[in-house]
Amino acid sequence: MGAGYGSGSRSALGSGAGAGSGAGADGPAPGPRSGPSPVSPRAADGPSDTVVRALLVPVPDSGPSAPAPVLPARPDAPRPTVRAAEVPVAVQGGTPCPACGTANSPGRHFCRLCATPLVERPATVAEGPYAGQRPRLAKDRGRLIARAVATAAVVALVVGGIIGGPPAARAVQDHFADRAPVHPAAWRASHAAAKQGAAMAGDGYSNTWWGTGYAGDSAGQYLEALFGEPTDLLAVLITPGSGKNTTRADGQAAPRTFDLVVTDSAGETHVSQHRINDGGTQKIELRVRDAVSVRLVVRTAWRADPSRQVAVAELEFFGRSFS
Image 1 (tube, rainbow, N blue to C red):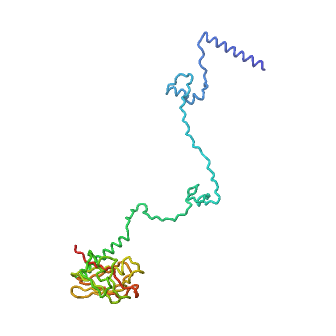
Image 2 (cartoon, rainbow, N blue to C red):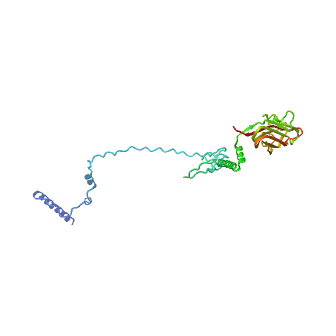
Image 3 (spheres, rainbow, N blue to C red):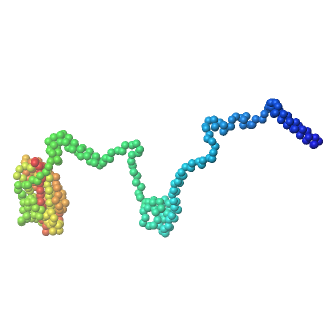
């Protein structure tokens, strides 16, 4: 069976070959066989990508491919050197930090690790304007109150002078008037010690003095100053004792309480009682218009004893200045 199949095949092939050769020599070649021809899958889908690129962009002749250009390299940025944190050395008996607990040596004010203050400071509450608020102008309330009181006092004096008439107006004038010393024309006293006359109290020296000449408090003895013309008196300065800088142990007795009797040009007397300290120049307000004399009458004395007499070192008067 196998041999028959082989001979048949060879005969068919031989006949076919002879037909083919005869056709090529004597007649036209047979036409294509009727029937479907095999088609590649890519031809069925369409033209290949290479053909499409060749139509759109000219492709140079294929040759040895040139190496692609290499861009210069960008150097990497140097990385910072990381150092390990130093381990703080333990301090024996140090003050612990309230923030991190690190022990600090005595005497430090700030933590050596986190710089937190180690000394407690009083908390200060700062008051300030909040965002969008306009800060207020700083004002001294004490100064404003003092100015208000002074203004009210001046207004009261002026209104009182207008309403109260001439006496009140004169009081306002005396309060604001400039003062000048007034020198008496003469001096006299009820009694005086030897070489300690009444004029010694008005000679302008504090180391000379008038003495009553009597031991004890010399109650009722007086010293009087006379003016050459009527004077508007505003104040009196008195330096009691036998000197301004004399010690109490060595000096004479000094007036403690006394009366000031002022006589004006109309013959009217103005009496006022006063009390002063033991030693030192002291001021007494005394406002009398048209005064012609001032008498100091002793009532009691400081350090009065049988070995001392009451003395007045200086008696000065001040009146209105008309300059």
